[in-house]
Image: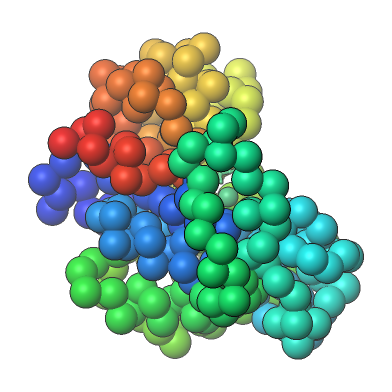
Length: 271
Ligand code: G3P
Ligand code: CA
């Protein structure tokens, strides 16, 4: 299965922008993804959730409280409710230029691409229109409460757009990945891991999954994991790798992809 564009890259590993170039630009906004593409990221990561009226939107938290000026669960709000919120200004409000020199201090929060909720559909269009191939790693968030609606809607959209670039579906939920494999076995799936459970220490993954998605903490504690996963025939895509020493660790261990909030810095470290 083609789980990435590794062979076509000049670099030995893919650099995937986590929620876009989210250290600098409000996460999960169109502007954050545009920035990541401009910076040369090989791919984009996003989280998806269903709204009350069945649209997939790119929002990480269950509620909109942290990343917008609204309140409430995404699942309780309709797309029109989300469209009325500001998903960008929080970043400038909380920015402390002394503590976070990487944060973008532009005050152009009137730019809708920096402040509007992003639908998955709009993100797929951005990738379709990109001037070069851009990988997409889509994470299903807490899909169990929706039965299979998240995966069904996601696969419908992917089928409609048929992007010419690699698309992967990631989840912490083996059940969500299993639903994807049952409906679309051609789409590579990534099993995200916060902890390395004893049953995965030998590098094996749930049936049919060919990419491990360990946190970088797992790699710090279990550096031998990468070689084991490779021996088991699986790739390793690591999150969230922002510190130069973690980038170095990933390179030394030979991971296949790095998921980072600061693609530009990681790319310049690798060049
Ligand atoms: O890319 C995987 C990573 O995003 C998983 O953690 O909480 O940032 O979605 P989280
Ligand atoms: Ca995620």
